[in-house]
Every structure is written in C-alpha cells, then in structure tokens.
Length: 150
Image (tube, rainbow, N blue to C red; front, side, top):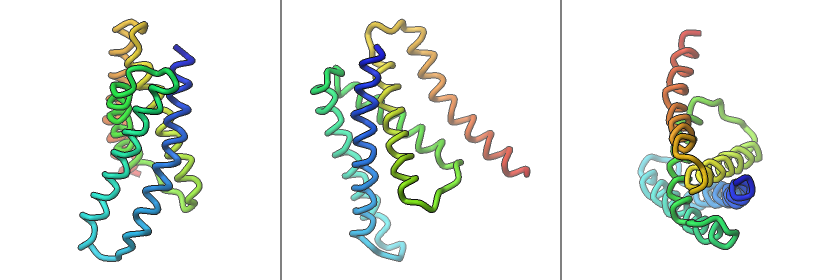
C-alpha cells in the first residue's frame, strides 16, 4: 500500500511541476491585460489540465498503480478540493514557491487517490479518508470567517 501511494505521489508530484510550468507558459503566451481574453485563457488552461491528467493515467499504469484512469479521476476530485481550500491561503510572491505548492498538492492528491482506490483498504477507511478530504471545504470556509473577524 505504501509503495502504491509513494509511486502515485511521485508521478503526480512530477506532473504537478509540469502542470505549473505549462500553465505559466500558457498565461504568458496569451499575455493579455483585459477581461476580453479571460475565457480563452481559462479554456487553454483547462486543456493543459486535461492533458496533464491524461498523461497521469498513462504514467500510473506504467508504474504499476492500477487502474490508472480511476486513480486519476479521484485525484482530479481531490485536486479540486485542494484548489478550493487553497484560496484561503496567502499567495507567495515567488514563482518557485508556487511550483513547490503545485508539486505538493499534486503529490498529496495522487497519494490520497491511490489510497482511496486500493482494493485492499477496508471500506470504512476509504470512506473516512474521503469524508476527511471533503471536510476540508467547510474547515477552509470557517477559517475565512474566523480571519475576517480579526
């Protein structure tokens, strides 16, 4: 189990850096300063994200984390939760900090997805882990509310 989670975290960590670099190049390539190009920029970013997640499914199969597609779908859901929770965190001025954060988020999502999709993990542990991931959303909302009071 630990090996499966480690392999998934490694694959997703590397792909997180690739996603960050691709997203950064996409935004720089579009390079507009007004709201008129927001839709094409977000669309291009969605294409980059889908391509990276598609590569993740193939890479997971190659390193023995099967079924790669199922792990990728679960990881995409976990990444969505991480992204929403990340909105409450302060932004860093360093681009390298963003690359490290992307790698950490992707690696964490890959490890969690590998755990949630493993057949040998008892169902109660998978349910508990899934509930814990989803519980991050109200916890982040509470943190925002708490921070607004200060």
